[in-house]
Amino acid sequence: MTPSERGPSALAPDHPEVPLARLLAMAYRHLVVALHEELVARGWHDVRPQYGYVLLACRDRPTTVVEVAGLLGVSKQAASKLVEAMVGSGLVRRQTSAEDARARPLVLTARGRRLLVVVEDVYAELEQSWAEAVGRRRLEAVRHGLTGVLLAAYDGALPSVRPV
Image 1 (cartoon, rainbow, N blue to C red):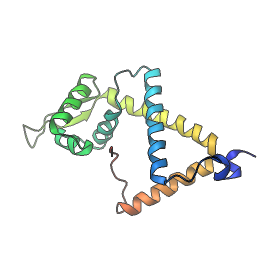
Image 2: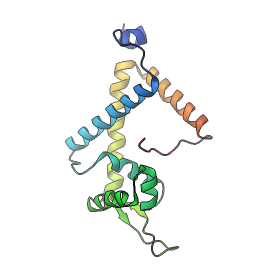
Image 3: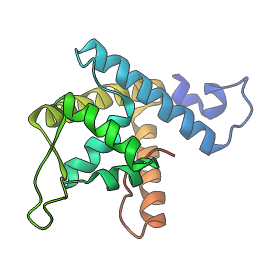
Image 4: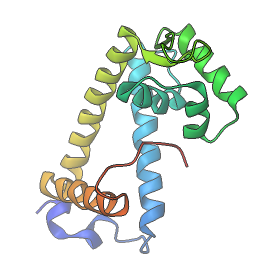
C-alpha cells in the first residue's frame, strides 16, 4: 500500500495539523524554489522570481509600469527598475501606445514567450513528482477543489497571480 492510499495521517504521522494557509504557502515556496533551480539547470541564469508575475501579466495583455507596481505592491520606481532588468534580459520590450505617446506598455518578446513555455514544462514535471508522492487522483482533487474555491471567491474568474 502506498502512502497516498493509507491516508493523510500516514503521510505525516509526527506532524500536528498545520493550517491550510501555511501549508499552501510552504508548497508554493517549494515549487518556486524548485522551478528556479531547474531554470538555472536549463540555462536560464538571468531569471528572478519576481519576473514571473510580470511575464504572466504581459502574456494576457500589454502592461504598464504603473500596473506592474500595483501588481507587485511596490513603488513605481521599484517597478521601473525591475522592468529595466527584464528589458535588459530580453524578456519584455516597451511598445508605443497609439492612445498615449507617453505610455510605453510592456509586451512579451519571443524570449519571454519561450521562458513561459519552459516554466509550464517545469511545473508539469514538478506536478508529476507530487502525483508520485500522493497519487494522481488526489492531486487532481486538490486542483479541482482549489479552483472551485477561487472561482467562488472571485466571481467566477481566477484572479491574477501576485505576491502577497
